[in-house]
Length: 192
Figure 1 (cartoon, rainbow, N blue to C red):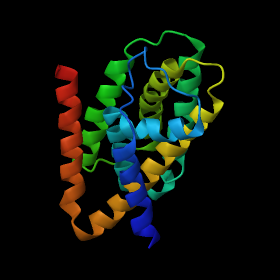
Figure 2 (figure 1 turned 90 degrees about the vertical axis):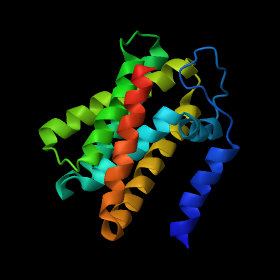
Figure 3 (figure 1 turned 180 degrees about the vertical axis):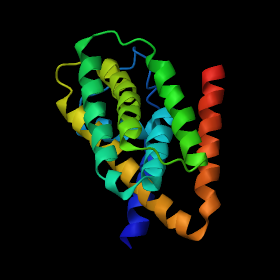
Figure 4 (figure 1 turned 90 degrees about the horizontal axis):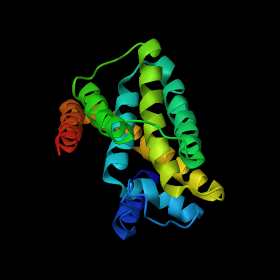
């Protein structure tokens, strides 16, 4: 029952949430836990990235099962803090869209990377994603929003990783196809 309820709840949240326009600095957001929870689910590029990370993490070495999601969350928080501070981080949008292409491609090719490469790669991309959200909220009172944002990202990664493991056992090519779609989406957004 829980296997159906959690993904169904996440899907329902995506359809009832209003578009966040994740990179539009004029968007005003309330600094609430609910806004933080819904926000990553309504930004198409961010949602795809968290799904791609979850799938890719499920393909990695069992020794990285905790380190990769941990570095993702730590760097999301670090990026969020940097974004809120008002610092300028160059190429944020390019970094976000590149993450879709690169992680999607890694999923499509079922590439396993050593920790020395996988951890920094995850960290850099997570920094860009966190920064975009922190810069957008831009408020010193965004603690609840950040908690919701991190929880939502963690749940999305965890659910997509679990679903990916189930799909890999039943239809191994499906994750490669999903990875290819994510990579192509990233590439098309970069070209746009």
